[in-house]
Image 1 (cartoon, rainbow, N blue to C red):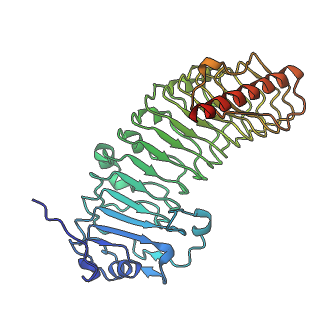
Image 2 (tube, rainbow, N blue to C red):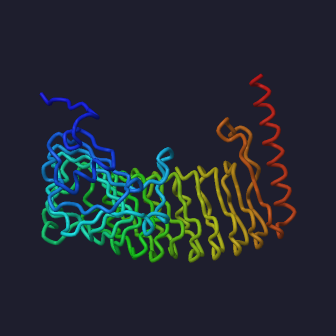
Image 3 (cartoon, rainbow, N blue to C red):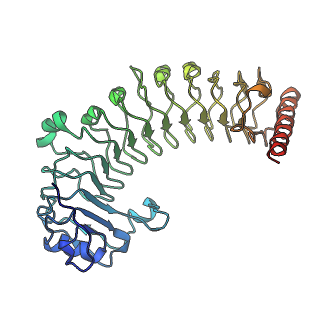
Length: 389
């Protein structure tokens, strides 16, 4: 039976089960004093008061280590991570003058190292029990060196559910990632060198969240050659995506699609209407967007703010309770759209709104529809609040 280790603040730092005081952790990393008692390390680098040179074998004695967390956080109460402030301006740093050859614990569940200074992970790392891997703002170009690649393909991270590689230097997603059958969240935002994404993404059978915001060299979203049963959320904002493929209809569980500030997009695929669960669409500030295809019937929120070239909207769903198309000066009409039907309304949709402020060229028919819709919501809101009394 495994003995439970209780944290004791009076013990020497290397004999505590969890370390979170920066002085204690720096002492352990510099002087190679960690022991089997240590099960967790959590170091906020913003609280360091000096540079630290990590000992070559600093972690090798901590073979019961389950949580290894080195992070950048300015605001401990809100747990906010400010990459723009911290990546180049963090006052004190951890240095690995000889690399990191320590043997990390095979019991490791959580590994986070913001601003990780090396170009790949150490060779001697056991990932069998790892659930989350976070390497935000690192100098990483590949996950592993060539020598361990073959082994990784067979046994890598089968329990991993979250992989955060945001703000890293990778120019392609390592192929072995497509073997992560348990991966739920893949975060690649602000990977400024990332140029493409493989169609093998459909092999991530458990994937629910995909974030590609700020990937300024990413011009193409991959074909999804097989249905992805669990993918619910895609964010492509501030990328150079030029188009979405017709095969996007294979994202059968997609609920939220965010492609804001994608200035290269002119059209969206007609197959978008086949996404029966798609509820929320954010296409703001896509300055070259000219036309929208028919949207899925489930879509009740559509954001189109600052789309200067958009001329018309057609076949909006009858359940589109939130339509924001402010400052679309070329928009002339919304055809085949009526105010949402009363019998479809429920408490989740009361308070929906249509905002077309700054759309100076709208025809009179569209203006009348908007006014009618606002009246309906005002009446129903009053009835709802009256019933609560």
